[in-house]
Amino acid sequence: MKKTSIAFLFTILFGALKAHSQFFVTSGTAMLHVPDWDRIVRYHNLATTWQSDDLPPLQWGYQGGVGYTFLVFRKPQIFAAPQLRYTHWNSHNDAIKLIVHQLSIGPEIRFNPRALFFGVESAGPLGPRWYIGLQPGLQCWMPMIARHDSWTMYDEETTYRPLTFRFDFRMSTGFHSIALGSFVLTPELSVQWVKGTELYDWTEQILGHNILNLNNKASRGWSFGAGLIITKIKKPENWWDRPRS
Image (cartoon, rainbow, N blue to C red; front, side, top):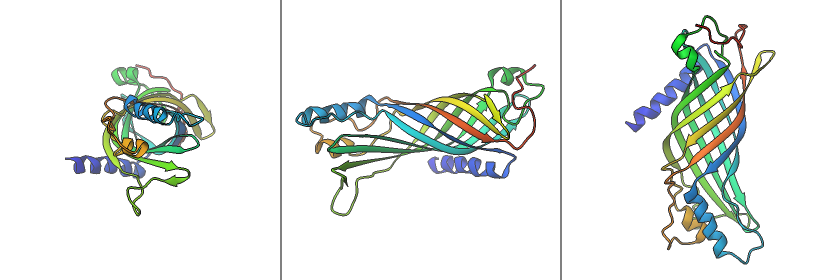
């Protein structure tokens, strides 16, 4: 079942490359909120009170991505936007540096609620200006830790950088606000579910033990994003057309 789902995601993504689609790139920032991982950082600070500066929790990071947007249903103006996104978080002080990489792939479905129920008379290649996006997808997480500029190791030959795969769900909303020639600029806000993601041996690598039985798996957590999408449009229609019944 899992292999079938992954194959389905890749089929949609690469099928879009052959369709009549609009290529886009995106960049922005992401705020990570996972209390279980923050608790591990707090215990590290309590155990290293002699250090001049505390280790901040993982919070603000940066992200970027690429994808294609193409029309699925004309009258309700439903679009699909298969995309690949990368997010990077890090936290450090003079003694230790924490890094978390996240790669997310999935077929986002974009729609305007009014257009979904009442349809539109006309719209440009990106549909109505305001949209809501829903994206089931696959996340790949990889944590890394450095002490005094050297990566931590499982043993003399194996660097600590375990991979975690999880299915996730992401919601977004954007507004196609500005056209510059054949490019459209779209501010976007998003929220992604992180619950259930486990950073294997995260506590053990940071503290050197886990006698307190701290949780490496996120019992709850979210990633909040804000960014800008730049879309290269192929069609000359008025992309700013609003939904009309």
